Image 1: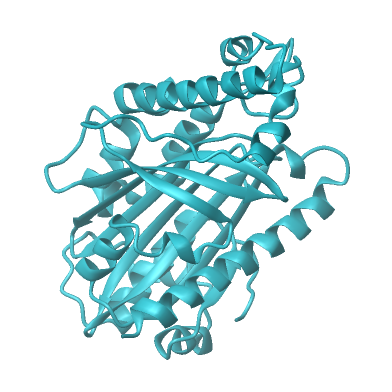
Image 2: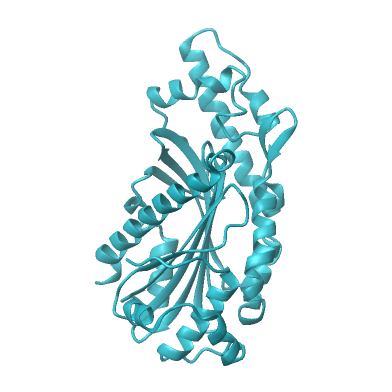
Length: 342
């Protein structure tokens, strides 16, 4: 695995479009910028291009937009076609390959919202929710914090409150997102005067970095910026409830997965639009180009966490970025070995 210096996502995606046109036998019909302009922004060396096409996984960092953000890109090739990769992604076949995932359940709008698998240890770890300490420990809105403040007198009563209210708030966040998209994501209460607005983070990030898609992939670009009001007929989506382990603590997340083809490539994305602590949220974007009988992927992950902001932020970012890169690289290596090279 090789590391490269940071560059803006728009330049990277432009470079990958050129790489795809130059090295792949693809018949895509999207608009190509001027070749000289593409070459001026291209930061892959000739050796790195060959390494990707020979099967190596190449990682890089990209420009981070906020003090709380970590950003990593991975590029690699695998021996599955675009539809096969989409199906593996959408069916959740590889979720268990992520070592942070303890359990997961698919959310079906036609069925009851999944029940949470909470152990006694999980419940005890979450008891600060009932003691007015949630602002700095859990990513809850002010209204959600108030729901937990009905203290029971016994452990059984307290744990019953946690079970009921946690499932209720996750269901409410899921329903709000389904009907209102990113703007409906409830803010995280930090203190009496400060919130963290995850919805605004997603909105502003899409409008800036995804502008590189507006010419080449206008339908996908419009969908991301207007969800849920602009869903094309060939869009596939899935919602997942995840039970995670983050820094040794149980955490719950809601994930939204999207896949759709446009102009000869497969576009996939994922958003963690609620995570119960430490990680504010996370998003993933993948562009999959056809390559002979397989595909070439460029995958961008952006994670946002208060843990990398503030004092010694530069050092925290360096460490956090390295950990994120290593974790994602291990994950995709495992996927390719188990599924993609068969």
